Image 1 (cartoon, rainbow, N blue to C red):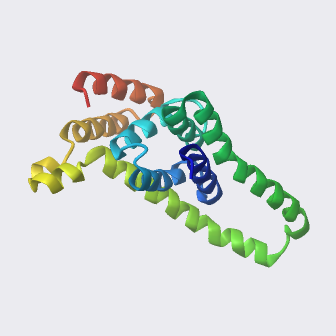
Image 2 (spheres, rainbow, N blue to C red):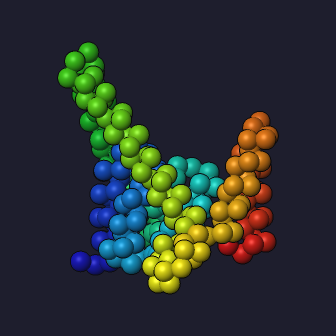
Length: 189
């Protein structure tokens, strides 16, 4: 299959099955990285950072980023449309069905079952991002040196910003993002 069409198909599937929002796309992107090698897992952490710090939904930002990285503007447009299309179709169908079945015990039960599943998807994505950002499993596997397992600069930055945020909890998150970006430049993470 043509790589462009394959990218569109993968983002269509991601949009269809990534229930719970943008962070739920992370496991799908990890699979794309491993299966197709379109980007590395290290690049994925960069995509997440860029997508989280730019306006708009993270899933859309990430699909646009990958599409642009692979095929320029046409790829960005195609990947974004591919990700969004299933959601538009599903939400139209659900909205139409909700009018007819909004008081149904079965429908209420379905939504009660989906809520914990969505939390699980998001928690899985958060844990994946945490591990990718703070640990270097590949370096550890190659050297078997426990000190190589940790991304020390990122770990120190994480602990420092976490402590700073706990000390100043009313500080706007934008300041933390700016401090982290500046520290990343200085430390050349």
